[in-house]
Length: 358
Image 1 (cartoon, rainbow, N blue to C red):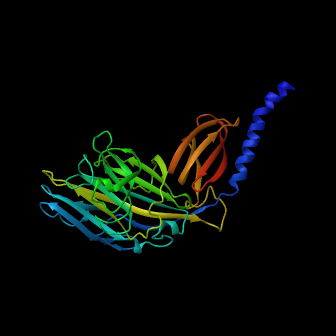
Image 2: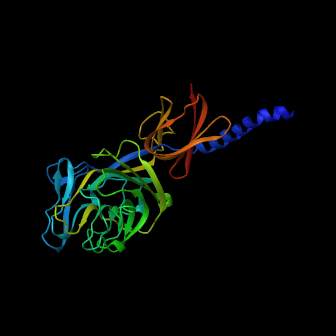
Image 3: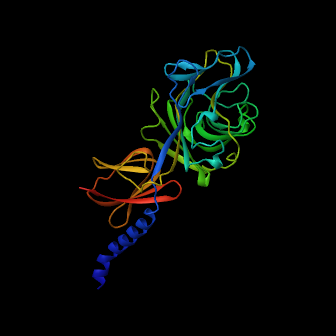
């Protein structure tokens, strides 16, 4: 009897595990992806994007010569600087152009989540802040005013006092963008200078006011941030401005005096929302707009999803690996056998898939 019990115990554990997982997977819903705004800055003037947005300029000269207005340059948006000058140079677009289900108040967003993806970089590395005579760059996700001195909102910024702590970070800004003290970090982990070629992805989940930050370094040129894999750098809860009526998004170059010109380049700015599709159940092999999609590849499985934590279990119920996935990832499974994939999606939705590696 003891021998039989030892043999059956792993199967008993597996049975409980499968029943538990399957019981929660029933509640999973597919998601509809909606692109509420996108701009690859390939036009001939600052009136582009889908839906179309007419951008406005905002500049503040502290000393020296006023920089030129932003312009399209080789399929990117360039915000130019000018040597021997201290200034702020910005471009703002009106959020009123964004299509539904976007809402100017995050608390009233008609979707489960909203995702921003984009590229931005400067042509020099040593960012150090946003005070007068300091150097910093910002992509403004949401702002309640087109103002350097009075706006509130959320942005991805890059600065640091030394090379060791210089990083891209998700931050909120209070009463303006014209001082380092007005920025408060929400997630700060992607170390690197402003002259990298990064792809950035930010996710906001409405139900929990949770922000997630993903990034990668594309090397010597920008890659489309809507595609490929990212590194997940963490999450944090912040609801400071979710009830504010946001009016603008934009990009800012905060520049001190240099002996040569400084530029900020932006590309592939996209905003998408995700909301439940009540017309169909979970479709793991169907439309890419569903919550996730699985396919078999050499030595494992490919998963495409907006954001998920994926854990792999063997037939004994032992966890073999856990990875955070944004957009797409290949999960390597070297040994043949039967495995369970536990897929933890935003909004506390969990699904389980059984896969067989032959």
